[in-house]
Length: 239
Image (cartoon, rainbow, N blue to C red; front, side, top):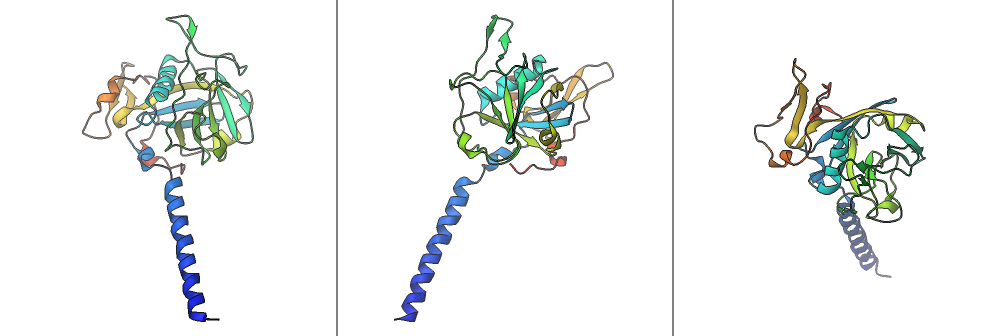
């Protein structure tokens, strides 16, 4: 047996396996664009604590705008988390039954969002935020879920639109019937953080010198005052 030839072949195979593993890791890695500090941020005040959600408005604009609009309308205030599973928590249903939708007061009809998939977004970590729906792909309305663990079989089937920033404790400790006391936009597109002046009016301050034209297309209210800290000061949840 030619020992030199054996080890040469072994090294070639090892190099091939290593190269394949590196390529696979790159292909499966979450997109760096998800880490943008310009994304809107929503604060959910729940009976288990505050949850901050970074909304991927630039990656899934239709789904992101729907969620931000519902937050701005106060549609989530007082709703409960009606579903608690090992892998997720689910809430946002105005009826608390798991069968409710948002009814647009202007039309008197339920509002649905067509399925919007961005293949750079995956259910690969705890803290992934996505729209819940029925069997019909375009039936998402207002209900959303937050993952407590990776669940890759949902990839490309449900619209991921955000991630939890920082502390996942409230998500992990949530129980059925726990409430979203209030929800509000605390950072508008372009990194503008919402604040409140002494007169009670809502103001926005930018975390950078440059503005963002997209900030005019979605809600920017959040006028209830905030103890929110900028994204750079919130520990990354590792999405």
